[in-house]
Length: 204
Image (cartoon, rainbow, N blue to C red; front, top):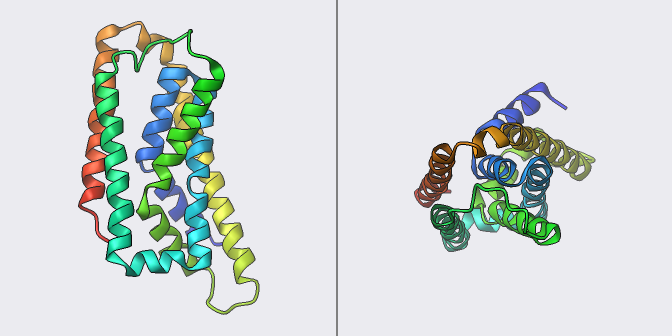
């Protein structure tokens, strides 16, 4: 496994995006456990993209403008919905002791998986980036592809969880300042909207 792959993957994972933002929000709203669960959900959301890359579906997505556009705009719509609901929900950054843990866990899992599932750029990443480190036609290409993908996903989970746990560590101090809470809530909403707008203008 090359150092180039590890360093490049780390840069890609550590660069703030929808997954990192979501785990940060989970850490602030629900605590450290929820942030780790959110990181896990975002990581699981990359599995369908990996399957698409291995089976060749990513090539279809890359070649078909319509297929790419459908997934892209579904992702845009979901990000804008996240922005709108976060902006309107004044309880988005408050301690909710009444919410049942099972319901909260299901919600975090569903949202985290959906965020990455509706991101066509993740599919293109698996299709265009990982194969560069797997020589075409080489023996054991599939196991090597799976190994590199597993390393990338493990790195994703660790980095995202670190973001979330870090946010959870300052949770009590943040929630003790109502004005700061309101600003953070609006900042999350604006960032979700900005990410949706950026995705809307991205091409294959």
